[in-house]
Length: 67
Length: 134
Image 1 (cartoon, one colour):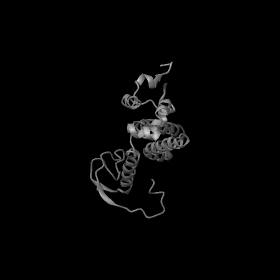
Image 2 (cartoon, each protein chain N blue to C red):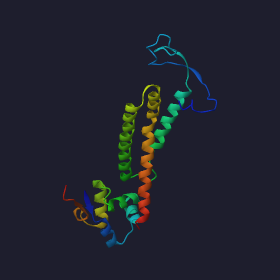
Image 3 (tube, rainbow over the protein chains, first blue to last red):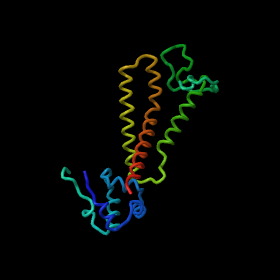
Image 4 (cartoon, rainbow over the protein chains, first blue to last red):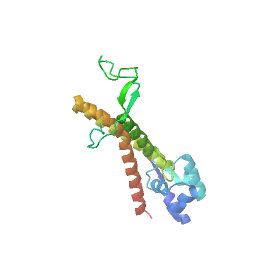
């Protein structure tokens, strides 16, 4: 459905899921669900994540081939 | 129904009620339609309390409400509706007469009940999976 690089980006910036959740203002379950590809974030959330990692949205979230 | 299954003395609150839809079929019915008449409203009060209480428990905001929990809540509600109507279809096929009437009464409340169970189960699973990640 959709893949993302959130885990990699988190490792680059060296922050935990809890810290990232706190920065963005969502629960840790949301970050965890996104990393496990269980949840596709809303546009606002995706933009917030991209801004936190100082990258573009396209560099973090990838469409699957069947989309 | 639920009150009848108790062994205790159920409080009987007599009150004048105004049934919009009574037993209009029978001429000698106790509660005629569109006429003030007496009725023990304990069962009505119990139903209302159950429904309102169930709604409050089911739809109150979680501690940290965000979009993922909203999505889980929506999906749980749809799942509960499917399960409720699935069981209702089974009951329609396999249950008849007075027993079916009982089933219909329980069915009034089971959808909220299934939703509450499913919602908290999914929350529990996601919380548990958190412990396996960092």
